[in-house]
Length: 388
Ligand SMILES: Cc1ncc(COP(=O)(O)O)c(C=O)c1O
Ligand SMILES: [Zn+2]
Image (cartoon, rainbow, N blue to C red; front, top):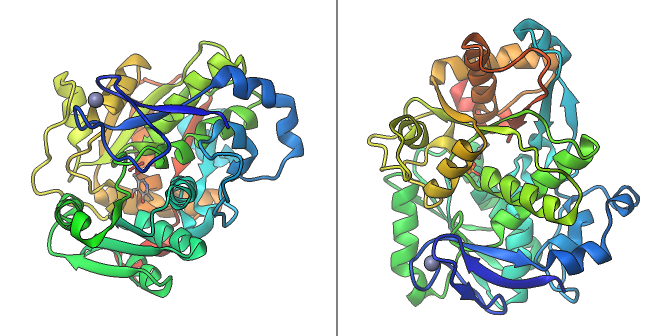
C-alpha cells in the first residue's frame, strides 16, 4: 500500500484517503493523491516494467489502489505511440509522434481515469456513481460501472453526439439529457447527489480519475526510453490529462526515473469554447466562464474548469502555451490525418494537428524537436459532424 494521503492542490490541507472524498473540505479545490514515492520506488523499478502486462496496471505501485483492492479493468492503457513521418514531413518536423488513445476501451483516454476512479470508489464503498459528461467520460463510466457491478448515472447535454448517448444506455447506465452545457449537468448532480446517494465522479471533483490519467505521462516516458519529448499538444477540456501528466513527471523525477527536463505543454481548445486560451493570453491565473460555448469537439465544450489554476500554471511553468482552433479546420484536417497516417481521429485530436500547424508557422517549434500529439479519442463517435 503506497498511497499516503490526499492533499489539497490549493491550500495543502490533508484529507484521509480511506473514505470517499470529493473537493477540499476547506477551500473546495481539487485533491491530489499523494503516493509514498520512496516506498513505491523500492518496490518497483523501471527495469521491471517491460515484464508486466501492457496496460496502465503495470504502474500498480504508483496508483492509489490498496494491495487488497480488486482492479476494475477492461484492458486500458498500453496504447501505441506512433511515429507520424508523412504528416511530420509536410510540416518540416522530423520527430512527430501520435499517442493514439482511441485504442482504449470505449475508444477514448477517459477509460484510464475511470478504471482507476471506479476501482477506488468501489473499494471505498460507493454503489451509485454520477458524472456530468460531454461525451466520452460518460461512456467510460458506464462501461467501468457495469464491469464493477455498480450503478452509473450520467448527465449529458441533449446535443451530445448520438453515439455517446446510445453507448451509455447500452452499457446499462441511467442517462439524463439536460438542456444546457456540461456545467449545467454538473450543477444538477450537485443538487441531487445527497438525496439520491450518488458519489460525484466529475472531473477533478474526486481525486482518482487524475491518477488514472497520469499514466499517460508514465507511458510516454517509458515508450521514449525515459526521455520526455520537447513539446506536447493536448486537447483541453477539464484538463485532467494535462494535470495528470505533469504530476507523473514530478513523481518520476522523485523516483529518479527521469531528470529535470519537462516538455513545453500546449493546451488546445476550440475557438467556440476557449476559456484557457483566453486566460493564458490575458495573463490570468484562473479562467472565467466562456460564454455561449459551442464546438463539435464535444470534449472541449467545457466553459469553466475547476482545475483552471493548475492548467494555467503548468502551461506557464513549462514555457508552453494555448491555441484555439476553428471547428471547420478540425473537420478538414481529420481527413488529412486519416489519409496520411491511417487514423480516424476525434475532432479533439484533429484540433491538435491544426494547432501544431499554427505553432510551426509561428516558428515556435524547431524542426528537429520531438513533438507528441494526443489523439484522445476516435472519430467514429462523431459521425454527425461529417458529410454522409
Ligand atoms: C476525446 C476527448 N478529448 C479531450 C477531452 C478533454 O479532456 P480533459 O477533460 O482531460 O481536458 C475530452 C473530454 O471529454 C474528450 O472526450
Ligand atoms: Zn484546500
